[in-house]
Image 1: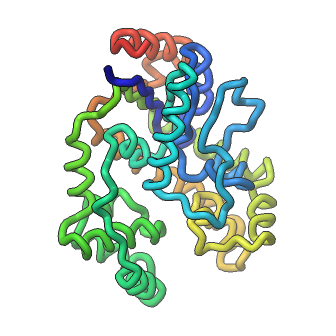
Image 2: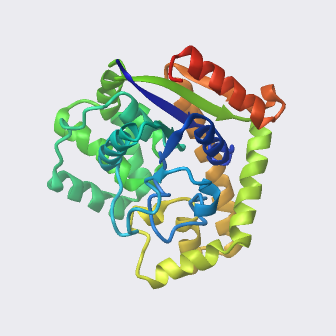
Length: 314
């Protein structure tokens, strides 16, 4: 019999965190964060990290587990998430993968095999040198010419992921998106429900604006200053997260504060748009459009529980 798995995802700032805790309380669930930033210590405000008091006693995993200098990638995420899922099952609870990193979710849901992806330091060094010399956009254009699907899913400034996709192509002679597509055609080993929480675009963008303003009010700039003082810099994976790279650029005197805030809001909107594009491509997703439930969380929860019962997850 397949083990149960619940996924709760959606674009940034839509309200996943709050709903995931409410769901976990109702169904005896434990939450694994499917987020590439909340795993880092000292990066609380910019990652919109759930605070211990907000967890309401629900076990949370992959929050505050790595130092900012450590690299967190999809292979490590998958390994740790699967490990924690076994622990959750052993405690007689149901795992809830909650967060907005679609590729991370997919890696667990379809148990994607990353073993074929040999790495080459030589290729990576050449691509890193090219990016330094020609710029991030030129590197991204190289990816666009060989793997447009990956290029559309990866931001030009996410140099590590752009390099990874190009490295895969050069080593294997075909696109990493092709490999992932084949892997995704595998049947999931879980009895799962894949929920995508969503809102009208104008409301979502309004929430993003408000969230950024609130982060700044809560001391995001001081958080970035502290990280910079600890020796963390823009070339680290952790410091390329939204909110961190923009304010680092301001602290390094490359842009003004107002420009940093403008870029952060704009890029967060673009990120939300890319997330929604990803989820629309996924199979078997259950859309939870907040306006269809009159923005009543209780109604959304009720619907989720009905679906979980129908799928015999509960």
